[in-house]
Length: 354
Image (cartoon, rainbow, N blue to C red; front, side, top):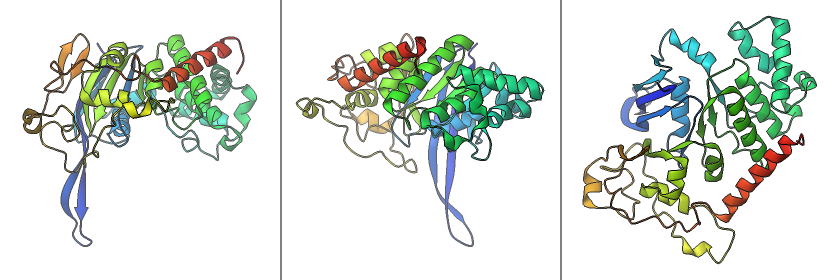
């Protein structure tokens, strides 16, 4: 049984016009029939362009917003009503902006202890000891509990956010672009910290990101979103080596090259992302797809199994030409250097240097 199972999750926002009498004139299909699962101890990365619905999906899983339709099952139980309080303890979140997610009026120790107070975990003395333990765990010192968020760097604030998420001993952590606001070297430290914590506590992650170097270092499986729908899911190794959906191929080819002689070798993905108020008929990617056929314009592709562990929503997945990654094995030199940075940061952490 999967730890988290999402089935046909949908979130539509009505668009209204009028001052006195507001009339609905359209619907924004932010998330439109998303399904995926996360196993225990697994990291599923959710990737795609800005505005594709990644963060909305995360908020729906957390029930920070109510879905229009669809179900979320956690540990076999549908999340609704009385089950929500249990979900709040077992599923936590690390936000993108480490400063905006912290209360500037609370000391760090109070911020980390607050979830334990809400869920009635321990007494004041045991919570204080737990706060100090968590600070050490994320690479900070116990005396940092008495400081305020503005006294820390961005990377330190994100470590505080991770400590707060760990306070109630969750099973799943939703990471909503947790390193995108940080410098590259700090990204490496935070990503390696997340991986270390996963091994230590058996955590599962829903990891939302747009940086494919981070995804390759962090994920076990990858789900690719486009215009509110998942178009491909696959094990990380298979997706980077042989992407089956044209949009996934475009994402991999879009990784920048540091060598100016190679920058002109890759044709960028043309066109603009269609409006979620008026998505194209058939396959939503057909307006930008280099392989488009009449079938793509007329019929909506179903997310279907085509290989072991790989599901693709594309009519032409089996007939596309082999993917020749202009970026070597699927990542450019820039991304390869990023991965080397992560490894170096991990070595420093193992030797006690932060």
